[in-house]
Structure formats: structure tokens, C-alpha cells
Length: 231
Image (cartoon, rainbow, N blue to C red):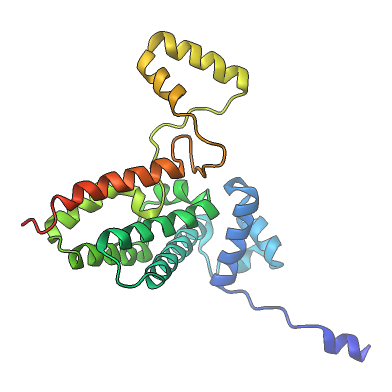
């Protein structure tokens, strides 16, 4: 009896960090649809009301997930730069953006969540401040650096924001859609047929593969180089 009591470990106290870590693990495994305050409380072994002391409702939980992902992106980007000291602005940004994408591939639900929040978390501002520092250190004016941020869009956070996401259907549905598309929009049909994604190419969406992501980065960096040191 005494040995069992001695072996019993005290329960880890509930905290915002612990709750968010559990929420991320749950969503990684089962998707956003599985995330509710009640389900998260069950995963943590606490009463649902206990969560409200750390995360004020579902909106607070979602904002917390964004904060956590932003912190993960910043940490990964800083580590990527630290592992390659002395590189030029282009390589530094490429390392940052690819590090951010690694985080997104680890949490494929994160792009949609980031795009849906009504406010910008403080961690995202800090991350973008690092991007601006890299551009200014590389010889860009703040004016051009500002325009670069607009050009990068969500690529800086590791994903390409997709306006349209076609419904996922079966193979027969896809073939029928291609036939209909070819009849009405031949150039779009030809492009889709020519741009079939490699199954080994990591993708975050319908048209957000790693190959396309890196191609777009290089295209933007080539264009920016022509404006370096511009007034």
C-alpha cells in the first residue's frame, strides 16, 4: 500500500501551455472538427469549466492555437537562420519561409485557421519584423520591403492562400469534371492535365505543393533583386 502511494505521481497542473499542447495534438490527429472545449477537457482529464480559466471559450482556444503556431514558426525560422550563419538576404528568407512551411506541413489545419482569425497575434508581428530586418540588412529600403511583404503574402507563413478549393470527389467524378472542363475551358483543362502533382511532393492544398511553393519563392526573390537599393 505504502509503495503504491509513493509511486503515484501528482497530476501535472493545468496551464494554458499544457492545454494548447493537448489541443494541437488532438487536431493533428483528428482535425479541427474534433476540437471542442468538452473534448479537450476530457483529453486533459479535467472538467470543461477548468479550461475557461486559461482559454476563454472556443474563440480564445482558437486564438491560442494561432499563437502557438506563430511561436513554432518563429522558433523554426530563427533556428534555420542560426544553422546557416553569414548567408545573404535571399538565402535567409528562403530558409525562414521553408522553415515556416515545415511547421504548416506538420499542422495542415493551420493555414485555414490563420486565415480565419479576426486579429493578428503578437507572435506574427514579431515574425514579420524579422523578415523586414532581413530585407533592410540586405540593402532594401523600407518602401520596397513593404511592397515585398505584400508580394510574399501568406508564403512568408509557409503556405499559398487558395481562393478556391474544388470539392473532393471520387475518381469518376474527377474524370467527368475534366471532360466538362475541356469542353468549356480548354486552356484551364490543358494546364490541369499538364500539372499533375507528384504523389511524393508534399502539398497543403489543392494547388499548394512544395514544388510550386519553392518556384514562386524563387520567382519573387529574382524580381526583388532588381529593386535592391532602390529609393
